[in-house]
Image 1: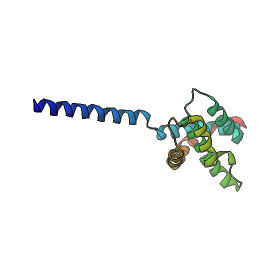
Image 2 (image 1 turned 30 degrees about the horizontal axis):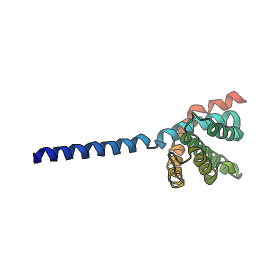
Image 3 (image 1 turned 60 degrees about the vertical axis):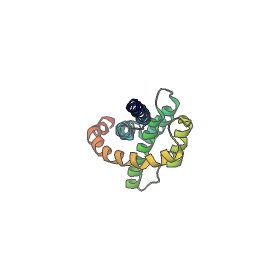
Image 4 (image 1 turned 90 degrees about the vertical axis):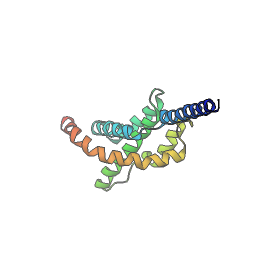
Length: 151
């Protein structure tokens, strides 16, 4: 009888632990995938529409209920990375719209506490930036032909 209680206890603990792990992974943010997609998206938009296109992309993204807020967030961070590279090369100031604090405010307003806190957003920004910086090199080689088409 004692061994049945032990096995039952082990089974209950296993089920509870499994549920906890599942619930954590089900809501975990896959920033890597969103950052890679964002690098491709923002570069395409920039090459066709410039910085005003990136701002419009951001505004429209946050307005669409069917687009997850973290996708918009990754696009904003990727836009900031691209903008900083371009403006540094041209010795111009970076676009204020994509400053971290403003991006975080847009994310939190749309997310409404469902997935992100301010601390989460702050922690994800450098992670997304690192992926985007790496991915932009690849995307540039894939998309630079668009410059020829616009001239």
